[in-house]
Image 1 (tube, rainbow, N blue to C red):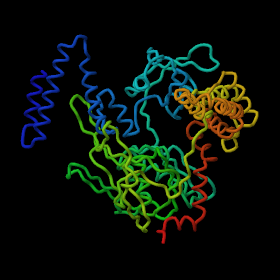
Image 2 (tube, rainbow, N blue to C red):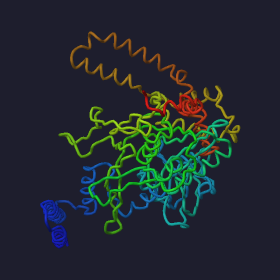
Image 3 (tube, rainbow, N blue to C red):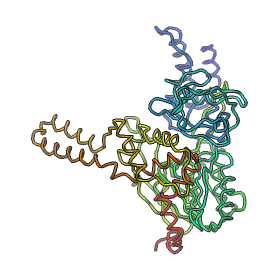
Image 4 (cartoon, rainbow, N blue to C red):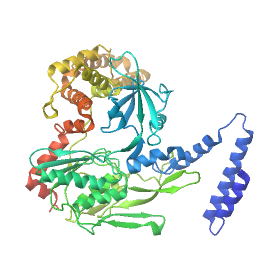
Amino acid sequence: MIGSLSVILILAFSGPGEKYFEVARNLDIFASLFKEVNGYYVDEVDPKNLVAIGITAMTESLDPYTVYIPEEEAADFRIITTGKYAGIGIMVARINGQIAVTMVEEKYPAFKAGIKIGDRIIEVDGHSLATTMHEEISRLLKGEIDKEVKVKVERYGEPQPIEFRLKRQNIKIANVHYSGMLDSQTGYIRLSDFTNDAGKEVIAALDSLKKLGASSLILDLRGNLGGLLNEAIAVCNVFIEKGKEVVSTRGQVPDWNRSHATLGAPVDKDIPIAILIDNRSASAAEIVAGVIQDYDRGILVGNKSFGKGLVQTTRSLPYNAQLKITTAKYYIPSGRCIQAIDYANRNEEGFVDKIPDSLKVAFKTANGRTVYDGGGIDPDFETGKQILAAITNELLNKGLIFDYATEYYYHHTQITPLDKFELTDKDYNDFVKWVQSKDFEYNTRVEMELKHIEETASNEKYYGALKERISSLRKELEERKRNDFDIFKEEIKNLLAMEIVSRYYFQRGQLRYMVRDDAVIKRATHLLQDQTQYNKALQARK
């Protein structure tokens, strides 16, 4: 069969041009090599796995976004692009070696059956999850609509596991995870994805906010990794006049090059807007942010975006497999491409680097403001990166904040209404005592750097001269660490409160609590309320 396949491939690619001859020749070599390995290698080989490794290596040599999708992974790919899947409506993560329920989607089977955040899933349809990979767990939980799935969980305070029998149903992941009023005039929309209906969800949220009195808007795209191009266009169309170019795509196939413009009348082309972005705002999120900036339609607040200016197209392959392949780069109205990494040019080690500032090109917005290509979208107002302290990171990584929130929930049947909920100093001190009972230890980056200095000094025979200073610095660090629970109290307390809130009010409540003290949201709100500063930011500097 391999031999006949190679003949077919040669015939398929024969024709004018050296490139096609090289393609056919190398496919023939690959088919022959595979036949030899499969037939004569000393140990048994898995043909499917062997080819998959070859395909993965090939796509990874191009860019991170060109991927092979076998039939068994097609369902997960559809979830990413449509936001829909047949399942039970939970999110899970491995915490301290166990699979924990981290969120329960309201209205869906798991919520109705009584599965709770913090439950540890130990079996799905009789399959133990002790060593199961996350991707396989996802496939076990998802499946045919209306088909029953058995889920066995361990729950805090319960001596025996609890088994749930649930019927899968179609789950639609919302694009707008939360919207609400920040004050009497500022509306807020958290747009987390660009799957089907993202534009419609933004319109619905904006209409509701305007009925509540919103005269300005914050659109939060932080952490939004992107999605469907047509939905990015739809979201832009909410705020941009009909017939305005949103994005153009240019690639190797001229017939595929396109220019996309807004198709309908805007919902509101005048409301002051602040778009929030960070280094995880990518792709479709960057199109929206870039378009708003290029037309001087609103201000951008936060940090530089990710810099993904590549367009992927899905191509069908035999046996229901698919190839998601990068086919073009996209360009926003000013003419700039915001792709940050040039995958076509790799160094001698095969690595790629971000485009240096010296090679970035200046462009102009509609009002004549200077903007640049080649590295993501720069905000009009930078807020600085919010970096968590080492102690906070370790509390999160070890699942201690998560586990304590679960215990808190089972010891408190209810909490005060969300708008009034606050953790007291007593609550926080109880948490600190609980953590200390777990023999909690952590290393700061400074400690790790100091250890590296110590090892380097020893290797280069400087340790004797530096020993006292290194010892003194280590003692200072140890003394400082003893006070970390006090120094970083507000940071830890805020994350703990958000986790506790999720147990009672789920994702919507968690986001609603988050916006109360978010520094970036506060900055954006202040800018929107200062009309003079807002207007000045949208004008070219003289």
